[in-house]
Image (cartoon, rainbow, N blue to C red; front, top):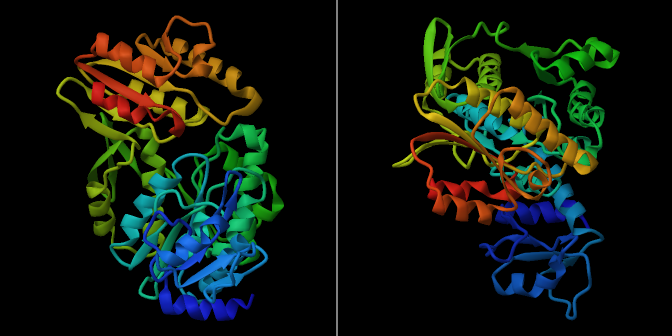
Length: 428
């Protein structure tokens, strides 16, 4: 397959697709394969729905002129994205890390968008399929791209770097997540710092959270990193930030200005500071940085404050791992409120063999912090002996809430994405 020919066709359409359930008219459709699906089965449907070209990696019953047979459709998609990236003469900032990737991406996007025409990763398009789609969505009008890089195993970030070719990089933090795949924190560090290694090789700039112990430790230990001179430190002291309040919205002082954000949780502080650091580096007007931070509010089940007729809810149910659970609970404890506090916590998934012990560790953390009102949801929590209310699944908790209404409480809801705990707000 001649990638130059395909790229010339892409420039005519500027649209690619991988799902026949969405609008695909006029697009280049890629028939991708996965563990539970084979996109080649939808090649003819893609034609019927108006795809201009259909990339297949399995021969079809008839040889339609719009079909292009390649060895591997995914590799073809990635190569097309690489070709497009090479044509773009704009800076790309790659963001990875254990927690806070999406929040940081959105904050940085909003700050930079006050000066540049910026595009960002849409939703969670941050893997070996999503990133090429994100790259191919970058039109010539854009001056900057902020892209999220996700990882589930060693080598993932290196692969994404070769596709996205970032000039700048930022690791939000290192924590305990996806331990079922990574096995240990050391492998997480190794994977995330693949971004550093790529940028060092390409003489790029690296923004570093100097309050993350894991990052600072490896920076000092590895000569490859410690001798590199294009690290840009950010942190509370580095950026002269003063915290004024976290009840529940973050208020902080910077440049002698009090910034009243609409963002819940002191665990979002470093995400905010990273956006300030990036904004300063790219010479965004400080007044515009402040204005952006004051206007920004999170949604999509991330650190959302929801006031119902009966309760106040802090909905942070997009994802959960041991690290994010602890910081969310600590932040919740520190919130000043006249209302009684209640926690609803769902299972933390993808933790592998350590799953039960890490859930037990979290329960001990709750006890240590003298948490009284807590409901634990899911099959993993349900197997652990403790005095907190436990429910095998979300449905059994919903039945309980219908019979035992919760009133005049401030409630933290947090759990892994597959638990879908955000629907509980309808009963609170």
